[in-house]
Image: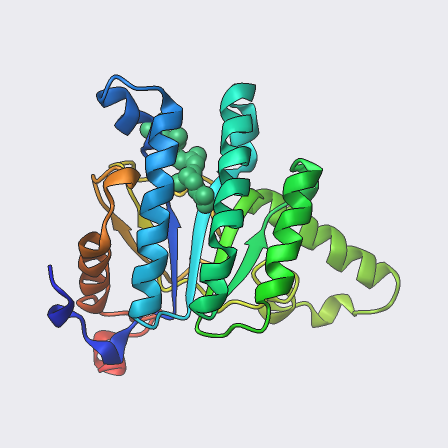
Length: 245
Ligand code: FPP
């Protein structure tokens, strides 16, 4: 799959990725899971670069789920350290490439050093406008929705909002992703065909793309393939084929 096949008029505005398969990729090579995560980091760099080149406005990566807290402590510590070092290494590049960094998820659960550094990177990149790179960290979609319900019900109780006025826009405006458009294309690597508690509300009309490639092997040409597949689908949003033509 090459760049030529991509229709620049029909680019997705928001791509989200469930980066899966680091552990299996490492195991296949007789290595520890951490080796897979390190290779996964390189794939992240390539895909961010590629989205910037393609002028995609929003890329959201599932880097650590609420369920991932149940992994062995050593693996969690490794992932946190990898995240910290990656951010330190990449801060300059984010600014050089006009990339705004954002997060979604409950950052309170992250080690303070990491949480503080994430805030610093967000602050120092907040004026950038070419691509918004959002990392989902300590993120779970059901948890996000529970928090939305709590926030809205408190507002109803305090007469800030009337229950009758609650609609999809109100809910949207309380999600972590309130600054992002809906996801157009959701990619999952490693052959699993699951959503795993990722952006359940936001993917209501997304095109889903599953590939057997393990995340550390995912390259620019794999992204092009996903985009071409997306472009060849007819997005009807509940309408008939004739209506959308
Ligand atoms: C899923 O593979 C991957 C993760 C839980 C972590 C994602 C982390 C990276 C891609 C590396 C660094 C990222 C950043 C943003 C610096 P898995 O461990 O679930 O693999 P498995 O399903 O084969 O066990």
